[in-house]
Amino acid sequence: MRPILMKGHERPLTFLKYNRDGDLLFSCAKDHTPTVWFADNGERLGTYRGHNGAVWTCDVSRDSMRLLTGSADQTVKLWNVQTGTQLYTFNFGSPARSVEFAIGDKLAVITTDPFMDLTSAIHVKRIAKDQTEQTEESLLVIKGPQGRINRAVWGPLNRTIISAGEDAVIRIWDSETGKLLRESDKESGHKKTITSLTKAADGSHLLTGSLDKSAKLWDTRTLTLIKTYGTERPVNAVAMSPLLDHVVLGGGQDASAVTTTDHRAGKFEAKFYDKILQEEIGGVKGHFGPINALAFNPDGKSFSSGGEDGYVRLHHFDPDYFNIKI
Image (cartoon, rainbow, N blue to C red):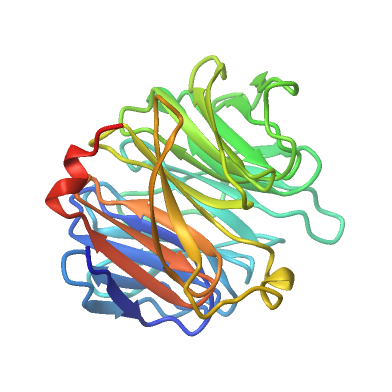
């Protein structure tokens, strides 16, 4: 499995997202310029220029026509995927950390960071089909709990919003009223900041990664803890295979501790675990810094990782990967 090295970012990667067809890969980094690549050969298609801060997150609509990006410059921008033109800019008073289109692409959930005297918040925006009718107003604003919300995603049928962040609690909110419906159990839950959260392809369960050196699998509706995957390093990114029962964890030490370790060997690896047996089944080495972003192609036959080293590594699995037996 020879990785394709995609060099286009000058700063650390923050987020990776495939479109629904799996032919395009979108990457966000701290260098202000989200980039789109061909997902089969890693060729760079183009960039989206307009932000002037680190870009933390992105999401692409189901038809691959529109891209949403959230940035530290306190804006969320809506782009035309094909032409790279800006369609609209949502302005906030604090950095935008996470964005996700709802099923149907008519709504988007956006989280903003605590900043000055503002607390973290979850915003629901309407995304107009005709961009001339697009407005700034929020349909719902949920004032968040203490600390940063690192990720918010839509629950089944867009009825709920699931959020997780610095206080290590996963919360489910009613997407109409903003009411808090349930929280994850403190005892069985994470002990430190939740860095990442991803949903299964069918939406029935979700996976969270945390600085407490573990990832956990949860039931989406009840927030019952199903599985825990332990590792030796803080987890910055998680992904779930849509094809096999595999989960992937990526991470590494804090940037401050990196200088004390031998970086030459590309020690930072994406670790594969059996989703059900919770056992490690392999690893993919190669990054020269912590892994900040992971994504699986929707067909489950390739995955990509983005590192603190500014590289995106695209891996197409060998045939024997599909026959791993424990």
